[in-house]
Amino acid sequence: MKLILAALFVILAIIPDAAVVNPPQGFAVHATPQDVPEIRFTDGDGRALTLADFRGRTILVNIWATWCPPCIREMPTLDNLQAELGGPGFEVVALSIDRAGTTVVKRFFKKIGLSNLSLYIDETSRAAAALRAFGLPATVLIDPEGRELGRLIGPAQWDTSEMVAFLRSFIPDRAK
Image 1 (cartoon, rainbow, N blue to C red):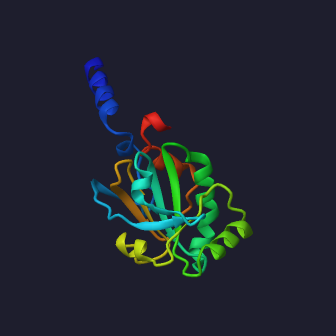
Image 2 (cartoon, helix red, strand yellow):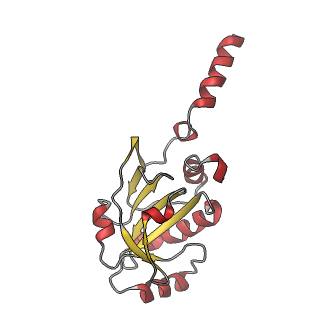
Image 3 (cartoon, rainbow, N blue to C red):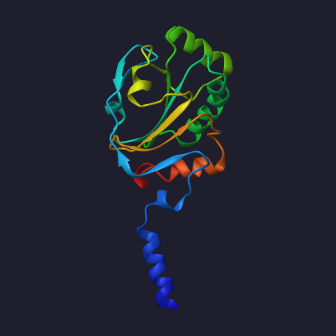
């Protein structure tokens, strides 16, 4: 019996945390990480960025817009998630595809009191197309090497204990 328990302990110790935590409903996790196309967008100050700027961190890219009611409802939960997990190992990249530009998105952030998320925008919507986000909101989980681990199409409650535990399991131990 002791041998079986010891073997089980060794197996659990070598299985990645992500395999232990079940994905929340609707979150499709890939069996193996998938390549992600390089997308371009800007930050709230107009600086050009790509996903390569986030290498070394697990990121949750959420494609959204101020005119999308389900997106609007989930934004406070993404802000809470960023407050809970954000740091050197993890960032929520809430990527607006509003064609009206940064001013509209900044006004929206202020109106609903978002204070933890950074502002990212792609007025062309090319990023959404490249990521195959054909509905809003769409969220893609990307590992520190820049590969897609999984995705969720549609809104979610991002700040539940289940979701936080699930996402935390993808943050490298050294960055937690």
